[in-house]
Amino acid sequence: MARGASEPAEGALPRFYDLLRVLCEHDVEFVVIGGFAVSLQGYVRTTKDVDIVPRTTQENVSRLWAALSAVDARPAEAGEFTAQEMPMPFTLEGLSEGAGNWALYTTLGRIDLMPYVEDAEGELTYDELRESAERVDLEEVGRPFWVASLQHLIAMKEHANRDQDRIDITALRMAHGLEAE
Amino acid sequence: MEAQIVGQIVALRRVRDAVSAPADRRRLAGVIRQLRRQLDVGVPKRQAAACLGVTVQALDRWVGAGKIPVVRRPGSSRELIDTEALLVIAAEVARLREQGERRALGKAISALAEQGPLPKRLRPNQRAHELRYEFLHSTAAGRMRQAVELSHIGAALAANARARRQATAGR
Image (tube, rainbow over all chains, first blue to last red; front, side, top):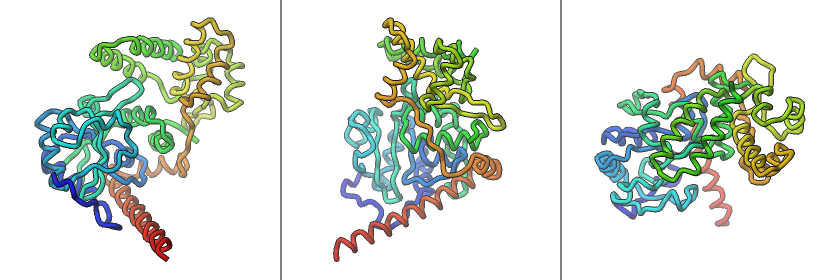
């Protein structure tokens, strides 16, 4: 992977559909979480990246690495992730360990790889998320992909408990008719 | 019924925290998640009071003081105790009672307020009926497109602001 790759040019718009398409074209198995999942599940809002939980089998991680190489991925600032979440170097071997989360810049915009996510009860695995995930078909992406269920999305956000998460939880519940003003 | 489930979740979480084998922890987590799914976004006050071992009047005083978050179901004016908050408070109350503390609810709320794990109630800018209407009159694909457009606008605005800051700093 090109380590000196540059992030999208100043002012360039992220190409989220293309980013998802690259993952799908490389047959990467993943579930979308984060801002796009919130929008897909009912509360449209802005987001600065695509957040995914990839399946952590060796075959899938190799496909993921190939997809990331195709878009010149490189780690962004540790910023929002704790040291515990980023214990591995960003290499195929590091990805294969499946123990870390990475915020990556690519030529198509930012992507957060999050093989490790939690709710109040502990780790939520790809398989658990995928079991109840919802399929999304978008012309712009060209292939179907999966988005975390409302229930899992809210459970992860309850656990993360940042201000934006609290707003997302209330908005999603209101959109789904589960909560009033 | 809800009071019983809350009690079971609180007890199982404590067991889970004491278990060290990852596989056993995962199994327990699965059971707790199943129980959690049986609870709605809020628990009726009578049930919540039973979980906490206080009267509804005592619970209402804490709600009135804004210390315990409440939610409402659409079409109902009845306040329910926020389930997530109730689980956190009930765990702390159980812990304090085991230590022989009296007035455990008040002490639990003070401790949790200090440590910060009580969920805050933050609202989106839109009203509930607007969000509901938009959800019912849109598709997942349509919402994704809207989110991409909005995010592009956000990115463009951020880039403009950055450029202005740089220009100002360069003067």
